Length: 367
Ligand SMILES: Cc1ncc(COP(=O)(O)O)c(C=O)c1O
Image 1 (cartoon, rainbow, N blue to C red):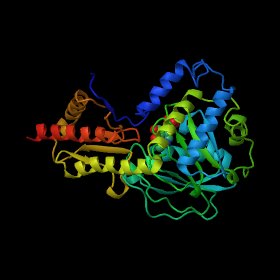
Image 2 (tube, rainbow, N blue to C red):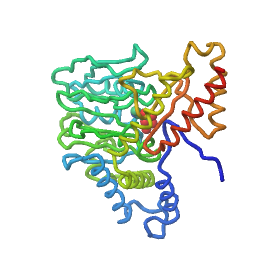
Image 3 (cartoon, rainbow, N blue to C red):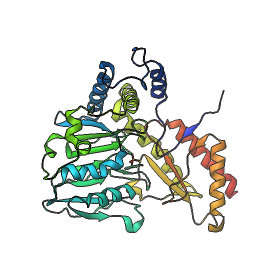
Image 4 (cartoon, helix red, strand yellow):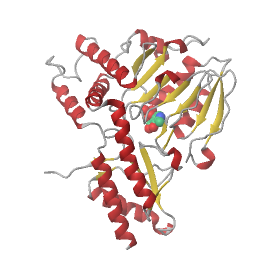
């Protein structure tokens, strides 16, 4: 038998095996049509039905009411950095942004092209190690944009600010990992390649009343209304990525939904955080109260490793982890060190194995 591999990549990342097997089977024969999912027209009953089913499963899992439309778009979460203000923010209006990491900052910068944008709080001065707590919203601002989980820095909003109007949330790296109140949000977007599907599709959940308030011509393909009216079929949608999402959502429903995921995600992240808090070699980089359950960056403790040797030892640890079947643990260059991403599809056994291997390495190095 081949060795068990655990993939800690931040995205694209591990998916439920059941879902990837179903996707593999559908490449040959989709929904008993005799035609593969990669080869079938999106204008068939089978694909239209699959897309509609995907939305109804997502509504059930997240508690999305009929006040919202759901669309599946290309262009990644990054395209939403401009589509959101283009569709929601009038040239004469303003919007508030809280910058808690690289992605939040990119969203903020992009929005500047469309209206007045206020960075009402930022944790940049502390290398984004925490979520800002003190800020005032701008009276009359159209929306408040937050990034619910900061994939690179490993911080997460556990209590969203109460927006004067409505929140816009980039939930690319924690959607479906915990319960959220969708009604607090006018718009939610998420690149799928972490907790929902493979790369190629971005899910956008749009409250109906937030559209239609801007006085600008929006290019057809960048207009949410185009895709809402076309039921994500105005142009050819990313059919395969939507199908993978369909199977991931099915797996979620069969396994207790978001409530159960949240419980397990707390268990998984606590297993690693408890280890980090007692380790003499490794230490987490994010402020304790804001520590993400999805992405956990950690480094060598400065008092344990000579800085001159740190780079070589990092490589050594990554090689040791790899030998033990633990993949993709290298940290993002902005934080350095290591990062373990524990999305829904990462089993608790994977985290236990990680902690075991980290402990073994620590013993070996500090003996
Ligand atoms: C929170 C967050 N927002 C946006 C993005 C950008 O996503 P994409 O590559 O789909 O444009 C990422 C990618 O990692 C992310 O983690």
